[in-house]
Image: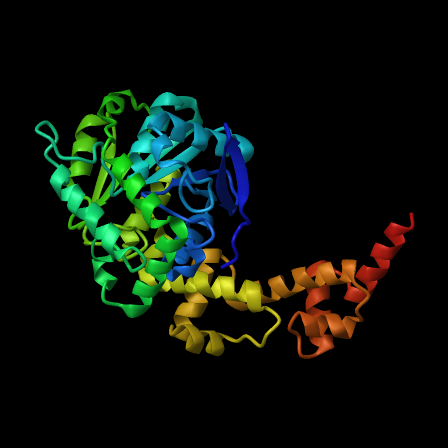
Length: 403
């Protein structure tokens, strides 16, 4: 998967790293949890596939909160409060020319989403919270989560084990014993924060309490939580639902805390339906495919966009991605409303246009560059799509250049 290129928004004296993907009328900003790195997500295949799914129908913004990932580090004595983090998000929106967006608050990103929606109501169209909470530490008036002693044990565990797959048994227990997942999760954590930064940011989270914001939320809110979540118990979202007027609560099965592990098709459908304003009661395209199939087909699309100049066939794609040929053909058409081979040819032809415009390569050389074995097949496909053969197209370009 290609990344969108890291950009920086300035919030006071602090630089906030972000990337943007996709396009469309809907803009969705993902507020990460504890730590993140906008250039490392593509190294986690399930996360890359999850991002790919979201970008299929919206403009997506990912950013690193101050102190994490590629954003500026902060002094332990100057950890940001909720107001400062809200200003950071506002800076990203301003730099990306976003007047209003839907927010996806993941875990600890949820409280920031709630605070931001309360402080800047005109900037937020909708709010999705996944595996989130209003308060991080259990108390007499909030009977959810760990008490301070429990959190202290977590901090000590991090201090002793940072560098390895810390917290995977809670974040994604379904894959905790997978050596490949352990490796890329540990790498992601190391790229997201240093040991001292990770601990300092965790300690900062102990002060999170946005219960005073809940009654002020006027935007549509969708709460998604897995009933067996090992890190953040579902009672947190039940509490949010009871205290946010008009909110919708979707409880799904599963123990993984992170949405891209153990993904449920129903969760994807709920997100899509909610963002589209409820016009689609159920996404019929997804009904015909398993969740694993959806991700594989997005991976096939990404592969075509990168490897269009290679020999590609339905049979070859089926073997490479471990999915039967019927699903390759029917699934691609369902998701992208065009047959897979048609999409391949369109990709090749669009790239050839750039070569015709910006290079002196011969027609035969261009045909070979974009994946056509025989130049004649390229010429026929080009004429069918653009109404003239490629040599005439180039001639017309040259005529226009000298006018």
